[in-house]
Length: 133
Image 1: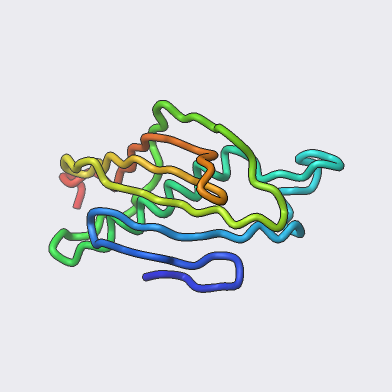
Image 2: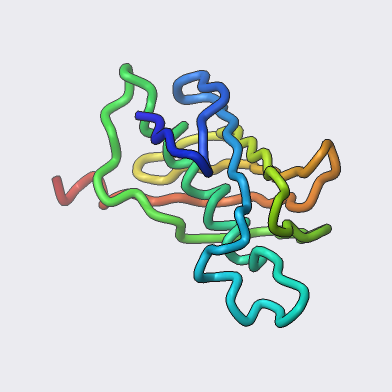
């Protein structure tokens, strides 16, 4: 399930429980254009999105639990963007599932650069309602 490319790689996966991955900010990504002129940095909302995608991989990886079709980010709580990610830096993302209820998944995620935390967030992911399947 891990996607491997020069910018992103999965580091660990405990199916249905936790996972970690890294993203290397190259500097030529389209989202860096204009954010900010002369001081490019990865937008905080993309740090949150990357953390949510990792949480989704963790949630869908447990073979003992049927996957949730259409799983997507539906709520963000307590997001703290504590730093920025600049070209040449490697961001380490970690996600841990806190619980499940029906088609909902609760997760906690962090992002760090050289052991310096740049993001802390709690996320809710939701799949299609179970009754509609």
